[in-house]
Length: 300
Image (cartoon, rainbow, N blue to C red; front, side):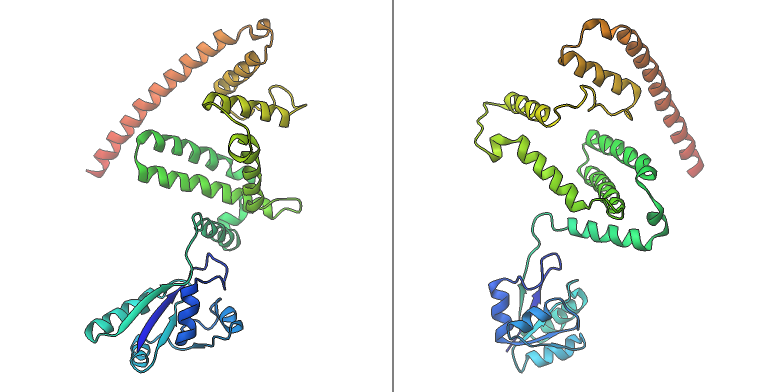
């Protein structure tokens, strides 16, 4: 006699089970503590009866000493139940096996991000009232925090900040999905996938390249064809900080062969802006140090 703990993941469509899972489900009496378990209809359609019972580990272990039992774990894993089973069989041994009926695919946890965002948008007053416009400061701040994390070299900090930026993508997608002519996060993902496939013909088609420089050249040519008819400087965001915007405008204009006379005044203004920015940056560093010292004294 034996007890099989059958685990599945809610991130894979119900009914898509491994061969071993189907085999054990047909070999033993299948029990579950979750009456609405998403796998029940699919097991039932295959002729496997599932009984919903109280998740009493002692009773289930006692039954497994008389007949083969399969415990269909809840989508969350039934960790407490499994721990109690472990304690019981250590004291009085029983043949127990854990079978994984389905496994998360790479990227499966992204589904959790979508679900959490759906719940927040529905149930949290603050999240519910946000708009694309109100979220802009948070997107900018999170992006800068990500840049700092990259510079820190701390992988834990980098992982956390990437998550915060990912949340912003999910948030904007959720807001957009509520509009009559909006889009979903699946549309966002489809768009970037299509773009990356188009712009990497050396990976997804039969174009041959000799190195990274040719990749960049191909990318620029493909992008140019896609944006045909768009103004030369249309791709430079107006919301960038002034110095960054000016630098990008000049770089793109020079690359396109714009007459040098049109750049009059740029160099002087750019140098003045860089000096002013450096001065303000220095003051910010000093201010940080003063506040940190004050904070340390306050804690002491």
